[in-house]
Image (cartoon, rainbow, N blue to C red; front, side):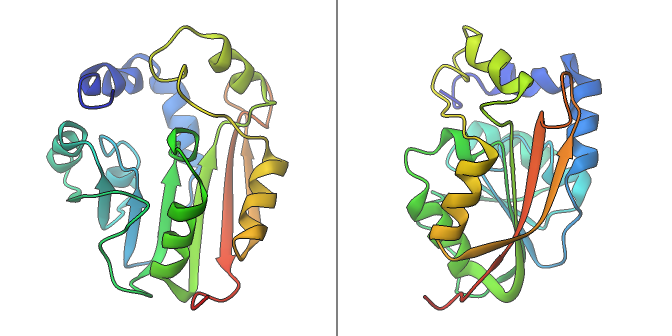
Length: 190
């Protein structure tokens, strides 16, 4: 889907520039070296200064590369990086498009340095924005699986992360429209 609809996906950020800027402001800047899993067109990696972006879609990576992001084609469930390679790893709007959360999040934990941080940003299922997106007839939102904040906290805990900070942002309806989790790995070797 993202291979064929990459232009449409990227133009959303132009049409909704005010919403995009609110989201971007909520995402913390990286400590280096940094990686974004599911970098898409680089709309977050480029302005935040994230070092490397990974995505399975070559057309999406083309946009990211044009924005100055170092790009790697790959699957989040099998990251092509050594253990303990990154100080900060991001997933912005990626979790909802994963078939399974377990393998990609275990891979994030594997490539994080012991004192690293995982930044995971979502539109919660129970937020006003999440409810709006789930009602839309969209090729993107139609396949997305939205999670609540509590569900994401449970998933992170089960996979060995501790949430150390939670940023909530008003996008359209409430301060729960866009949420960024900052999580630390409990033990990156397990």
